Amino acid sequence: MQVQIVDHPLAAARLTTMRDKTTGNAGFRAALSDLTQMLIYEALAGAPSADIAIETPLTPYTGSRLASPPLLVPVLRAGLGMVEQAHAMVPESNVGFVGVARDEATAEPVPYLESLPADLSTQPVFVLDPMLATGGSMVHTIELLVARGATDVTAVCVVAAPDGVKALEDSGHPVRLVVAAVDDRLDGAAYIVPGLGDAGDRQFGPR
Ligand code: URA
Image 1: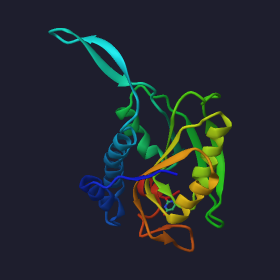
Image 2 (image 1 turned 30 degrees about the vertical axis):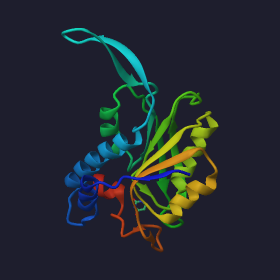
Image 3 (image 1 turned 180 degrees about the vertical axis):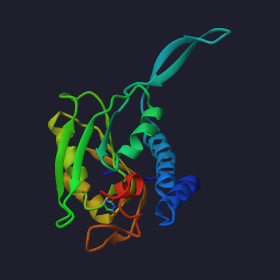
Image 4 (image 1 turned 45 degrees about the vertical axis):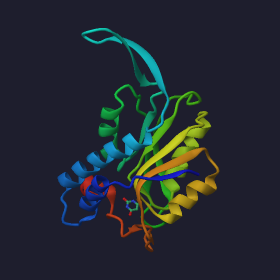
């Protein structure tokens, strides 16, 4: 599996803001939005372009557009904070939704929503979820996508744990990972360490 770590001073600065426990909800959301812009930019580097005929004020010109805009799939709740910026970067994309809560006792994913196109065989899919911890929610989401024919899936995450990376690898599904950092480990409650806490709570407040 391809793991692309976005190693850039601006990405590191926004991630530091997100990790800092003194950053409030608004600052956290702003840093996540900025970082999402960088992750999407990197995730689309090398994506195929198609020619498009336009006219500049001076002359006809052959420009380019994304040949195949990815379906954007935020994993609710935490992925909501990534979708607006991702959509701003690729305004021609469609958006699907997957909702997976986490059972705090077992850390197992509890699915509660899937709103996706029936046929995903002809387009790339970007799954947006800031935290790749055990990988349970991401693997669940990828299975929903693969069941609809997806063959080109990118997990766009902020922080991953080694366990989550391994879970994606072991799933055997066609996925690559674009992420700002792979952290040290999971703690006993399946939180990423050093991490940034609960990415949903830090954006939207506690449930
Ligand atoms: N989900 C989060 O929001 N944070 C973690 O550290 C792990 C899973």
